Length: 170
Image 1 (cartoon, helix red, strand yellow):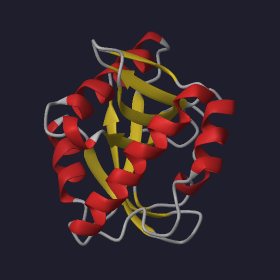
Image 2: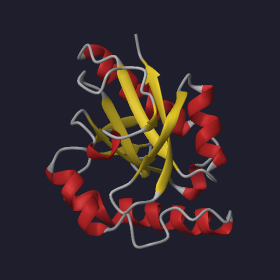
Image 3: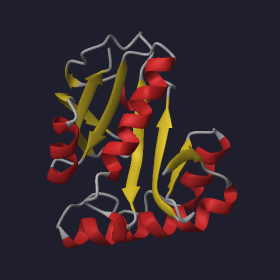
């Protein structure tokens, strides 16, 4: 498997994976990604900023997507709780992580998060932050299993409540 930056040629596959994830979240009665977000404009913006990634398997299929950035996340400035690493220190951020429906529960999300941990380590950035819906227990289980710590509640730019987690890489 190879994780690399997305290009515009990946948009169709990324949107298919995200749309399948929206259906899955709805089937689990999780009110996340049910309001038109994420959409093609957001994915194109991520690609333009060089913050969109795809995971390609051994037969050259796109099987997962994620946004990963080391830019400060505006919605993380205010938290009902406390981050492990000060807001003024550089950190990584993950958003829009989704796995192809035929490849779920195979350790792919863990693989992607570990790849991002390695990228941060190489850049001497100590922290990776992520947030998720309070009903998204699968994502909460995953991040806790990988050593993330619950830090508090943040609100998205569209005022949705999210549980915030952080992992100190080194």
